[in-house]
Image (cartoon, rainbow, N blue to C red; front, side, top):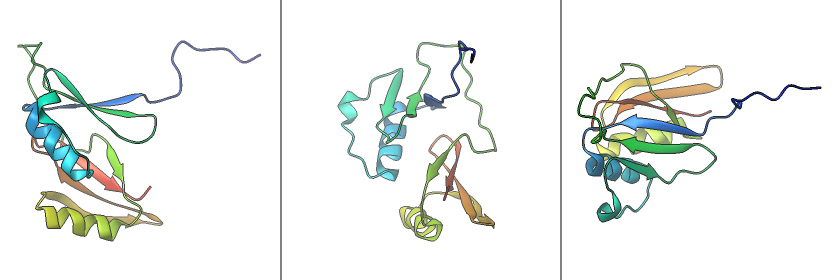
Length: 126
């Protein structure tokens, strides 16, 4: 008999810590080709509508005056891009800062960008 654990082997959401919720909501929506009504973006969190079972929540921590936004130099998550070259050109055309050029290992290719707060996000073909 298989034991049921209190924590599931499943990711439900990714939280991205931001300093300006409306700016970040607009940036992520634009990156993903989504419309966003900035009047509906209200602190402290905004959920970017993404496909699949994992959510993307932007969090500006207005409820936590002690919060200190710290940026990781490593990617905090990735977005899927089936054609890495097309994705790279799309990012360049948008003027988004690329912090790591395309790298390829076997069939896997990726590159890294920065969001408005300096959070590093990976664009990856898997």
